[in-house]
Structure formats: C-alpha cells, structure tokens
Length: 389
Image (cartoon, rainbow, N blue to C red):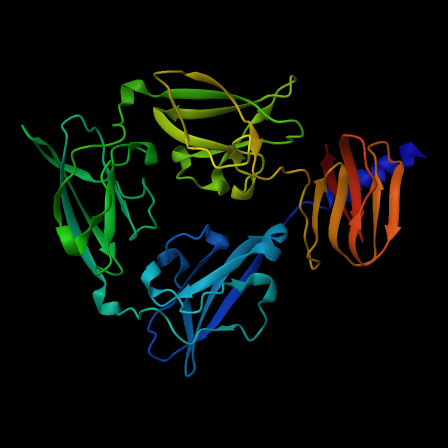
C-alpha cells in the first residue's frame, strides 16, 4: 500500500508548483488625469515610474490599463493603488488598497487623487557632482529610475585637487518632485551618507563628500555566509544591497548535512543583507522575541567567510504555496496543522503515504497534535507539503 501511495503523492506535489499568471489592471479616473501609474505588492511597492505607467484606452470615460505578472500563490494577498503621476504625492485619495483577488472585468474606479500631474513637468536634466578623489565609479539613483542604484552610471569629466567631477543627463518625468542621490559603487552599500538631494532645492550642481563605503576593485571577491537557523527551517534566502534588496533575485542558500545553510555572494566588496526563510519579506529574520533586526554587514576584505546565527523568523515558512481559485491559508500552530478556507475536506498523510487524519468539512480544519516532521496535506483536490514542529 505504501509503495502505491508514494508515487501518487509525489505526482500530486509535482503538479502543485506555483505558476505565474498575467492580470490586467483597469481603472476609470477623472477626465483631468493625463497619465496614470500603478504600484503595489506586484512590484514591491516601488515608486511609480515608467515601468508601471499605464496605457490609456479611452478618453470618455478616461480609462487606463496595465498588464502585471503575479505568481498563483500570491494572487490572494496582492494589493495595489493608483497614482496620477510618477511619485507618491500623486497617490489616490482613498486610503484603502485595491485587491487583485477582487478585480473584475469592470476594473476599478478612482474619483480623486492627492495631486494631478502635468506632463509639461517632464524634462531632461544634467546633474554635475563633485566627489572625493578616492571614488572609482559613481552611479546616480532617484525617483526618476525607481531608486535603482546601478542603472545610471555617471561619466567622469574632470579631476582636480578638490576631487573628481562626474556628470550625467537623466530624464525626469517630473522635475518638480525630482529627488536623487549618489552611490560610489555597485549597490546600496556604497550610498552617500547625507539624505536625498532635491532638484528644486539644490539645482543641478552639487557636492557629495561622504559615502558609507567607496568601491575599490582591488578588494573584491566572493563572500561566503554560513547560517545556523532555528529548528523547522526548510529554506534560506539572502537578500541585500548586492541586488538592490530585490527579493525576486535573492540568493537561495544551500542546505548542508548538519542542517546549516551556506550562501555565496560573488564579486562583492561590501554588502548589507538579511536572511529570510522564504523569498518573501513576510519571512524575514527576527530577534528571539520576534522584533526587527538591523541589516547585517559583510565585506570581502574583513572575511571573506562569515558564520552567523538566526535567532528567529517573523514567520516560519513550512509549505509550498499553491493557491488557485481558492483562498486557502495553512500553517502549523502548537503542533497542529491549521487550514482556513476549506471547501470540501482535508486529508493529512505522513511521508510513507499513511493517512494520519481525514475530515470532510467547510471552513477551518485543525488537526490533532502531531509529531515534529514533514506531512503531505491535501486540501480539497490540491496537495501541499508542510513542516510541523
């Protein structure tokens, strides 16, 4: 019996891999709105920019659309807002976010915005900056490029006794709200110490005399991080300044035989980082009491190998999410498996294929107390893997 059940369970799990889905946001806005943007969990709540600029499909009424890609498992929790310009000041007036799970063919409606953007404020701007002579390379970042620290490298135009001068012409969708800063290397670990420069306040010629660190190509190499984790951790991801804190491109650590994890960040000088037990900020590392910790730091010169211990996770990842049309939520609590949103029933198997518990119900399922270990949970007709501790 066990030999027949296991292949079936493995097949069910293999078909339960979360797939990406394409959705089209659609919004009707006042006629005075000339451009429209969207931002939300689908883009990490990044600053409204050209990447999330919507397409106008109608003038009367004024309607805009935008295609976005979201993993199946994230549809139920995806939220977003609309903006009448490329900055947070143009946010919709209504405080409540829209939910992707509630999006229908008619789309959304926004009656008012905090401000209305004027396309005449769009312009090319040349920024000139004087930095210390020790700076090898310089990038400019700001709300004009979604605060990407590496997308816009500047050109060195002169060296003087006072330092080095760099220059670059950038395109701003809104010069009245243009904010920017400088990064003396390939990532946020090298950002300037001072706060943002505001174009309407400082103009195009500025001095930046201090950075958190200055990139030196002679001090670059691979940094290895060995991570000791709390019991029940099934995966570890490292995200940080090396990849612009983008969870979508974070590094997954390799699990070692002793239960620790190892991640290698290649070709890096300095970095700030954090660990997560899944590639989502909800699973960020925490203090023993569950509080937020400061960014960790590492450098090739002072390492290149580091041994760290994660005391706790804000939320422990224990299952492979595969939410489709049903808004399930499942988790381990006090040694039991809890499933919310059940439509017909739940069956719990151990790894040998033996049925541990079965229930036909609608609503919330709570299993009996279980031994620590991995279980297969079939919710209605979908199977998931879960760790119980």
